[in-house]
Image 1: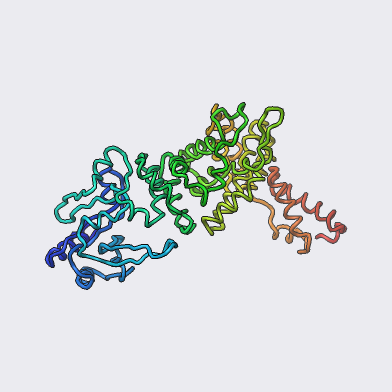
Image 2 (image 1 turned 30 degrees about the vertical axis):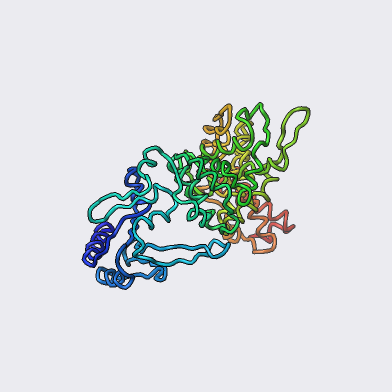
Length: 453
């Protein structure tokens, strides 16, 4: 059975006991919007937890995800099953909630406790009737995000980020009253993991991820989690190259350009974060000399800021390494393209990049994300990238080749292999490289030719 079929079976069995089952949350919203959503969430009203568990055991293997909270699953299905519940804030931390399942609270009260009107829509699983207590369908038609209840909304500070994330994903506006409420909600008790999760949805699912950050800016909520980004607001740039305005505006433009290319890169999340972080260094090295704005070395001066930002929201070492690498190198491809640098130089650049193709795409987005737009480097860079790939696919000198040539492993072995790698990047074939490495080894080891067989 499919998830939809199992939901109907559960609904039928619940109905026999006097209960009702509703599709809730995003699956109802996205169905009305004609957006794909493979997740099915159902909420069970009017039966006890024991009765629900008996139903689930009769149709499959019940998984008690949070029994005390009334949250269940079924083995082999991705459907989320829940009883309506109340959440009462009892502390200052993001986990300081007292959660109680209450299957008899009624559908109005259950809907009232959700965040936005568009997420409070319910659909009766058996009849298909849409239950809309708070005007969610109208708000969907108008493209509006509106919170439902001041007190329940403010209990979970993550809803501030959800507002920004939904605005970005659906290109919705947030009502003035919701923005006003969000301005006074403290985000400091949230975990970096939860911040990252909402931001990741905006970065990977929005046509214009900039909307997420623009809304966080509008709600005055950049200070605690995004201070490095806030520092870019009003930060001047060289007007000869950046007529779009301040560094914040440029960053937002680059971010939206990156969204157009994220599906072709090797590491989409890292790529989008690199676009976000690439100019953090301008906040600490922007100067004005004779009326001209300069940001010399911002690509390296910004690395500590980028690292601090990333470590605040993630512990993923691969992600951090990728973004730091891309940030440090983001200017070099365009510089080399402008200078029509030698093949050896572009090969060395691509070799130093964790994902050279992604680096090229970031540099292109950096050129497109400004006024005037420029994209005069892509053809050159892609030609060089394909040449780099071809060179790196050729046979090359490895340690065993040096040993077979008569060289004994020693302390200088890594130095000799590094020399072989330089020759490889210069386009030398394996035979020529090996010959030069043997000559180099004689020089480094100061041995006679008869000591190398």
